[in-house]
Structures are given as C-alpha cells and as structure tokens.
Image (cartoon, rainbow, N blue to C red; front, side):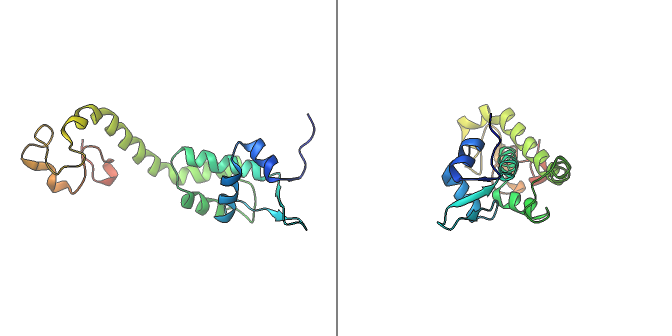
Length: 154
C-alpha cells in the first residue's frame, strides 16, 4: 500500500473517509473542516482531515448536533486534529447530555408499546395512561417519555 499524500483531493478524502463529496463541501461551509485551493481552484485537504472527519462522524453518531461539534472543535488549537486526550476531555463535557438522551430512549423503549395505541404522544389526555388528564401539570408532551432532566416522570 502506498503512503497517503500530505494533500488530498476531495475524491481521495471521500473514498478514504466514506463521507460523500456533498457532505465534505457542507462541512467546509460550516467551518468544521478546511481545504486549501490550488491555482485551478481545486480543493486540497491536509491528510489530518481524515481524523477530524472521524471525530465529526463519531460525535454525530452519539447524537451531537453540528453546532455542538463545531463548538468542540473550536476549543482545539488552530486546525489541529483531535487527539485521544481531546476526545476524553470533550466527551466528559457531553456526558450529562448523553445520559439524558439514554434515559429518554429507555423511557421510550419501555413505554412505546402502550403509547402507540392511545395517542398520548399527541393528545393532552389519555384514558389508559393519564386518567383525568393528571399529567397535564407536567406541561406539554408526554412526560412519561421525557428524560428526567427535561421534566419527565417515571
């Protein structure tokens, strides 16, 4: 296998990272990644962009928004690729949010079957799960499916 060049075309980055050309352009527009331009105005990405893309995709898989990812990448020194230490620091700041999402997903999983039939996800009252609309005091939505940090109840 040949050594990867220091500057990669958009096609090489897409092939190597699995990220489509369109997403690479989108990430660049959003300031998540950067490319140099050749005299012919073609993009050339530094090889380190592959690690940055892996960071972005992993953060997306755990449910972070592009805005949250951008904020995290902005905490790194100028255009530096995230390291293992960086990931540990950043993931620690996201732990509470991830715990809330896990809690919300578990509530959804545990209550999904009984909620689908009665429509309590969209109605203010439900005779099966919410006799006399007692849950209205918890605000709009389905409080039994919300994360505890968002006012959900068990």
